[in-house]
Length: 255
Ligand SMILES: Nc1ncnc2c1ncn2[C@@H]1O[C@H](COP(=O)(O)OP(=O)(O)OP(=O)(O)O)[C@@H](O)[C@H]1O
Image (cartoon, rainbow, N blue to C red):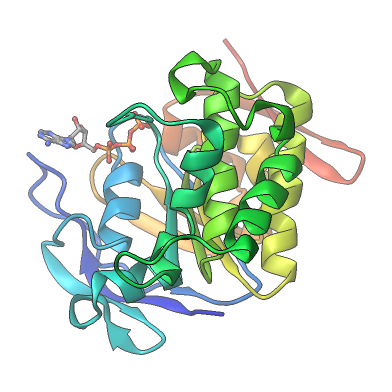
């Protein structure tokens, strides 16, 4: 189980002069949603948290240790990232791709063990991909490809899940299944942060929200304190109507 913290973190969004410093604590058991309009910096934030991009100021810490001091292998054991776009570098099957999730746990040149294979199969089955193990990834549909990315992270077993629009390309059933999976990960002591465009998924599944404005302004806190219609309307530059449905707040954009 890992704890991810930022101290005075200013993400490096090209062309943006400033940005509120972020002092976040993503704790085991928490599910954070990152909301903001296109270009606000959500992906940049996730990539910065994963150590894939330098920050402009401040630092990211995993379990109290600056990310920059950790070896990449250790980072990959602690943090897992579902990318918004999937680029397949070389031809691979679904099973081989899920097994990549086990690489942070193997020594250099070590072959995957039967246990690694079992974990990959279990992850594929959890994402309804058991039947597709032998298929080339390039032949998958968009939703299948997205579920494979999540299955690969499940096989990786990181303490912190960073997911960039995890419901991209997914039908309604699989959207709920993936949100339930992320919720279970948190219930099992992992920490989850995801970028979302769907306010209703954020309201239903996230216990904390970070609102990123295009200016670089940011605010964060428990979901019930952040789902203020006026603040959300300012965030998106969009009028919203809201209602309570089965105990959840639901938002609809009003043309
Ligand atoms: N390599 C780059 N060169 C120039 N501009 C970049 C680069 N990477 C990101 N940007 C810009 O930084 C801004 C933030 O991008 P980012 O992908 O973090 O936004 P986002 O909030 O995730 O958006 P979306 O909701 O569209 O996914 C955007 O305006 C984007 O065009």
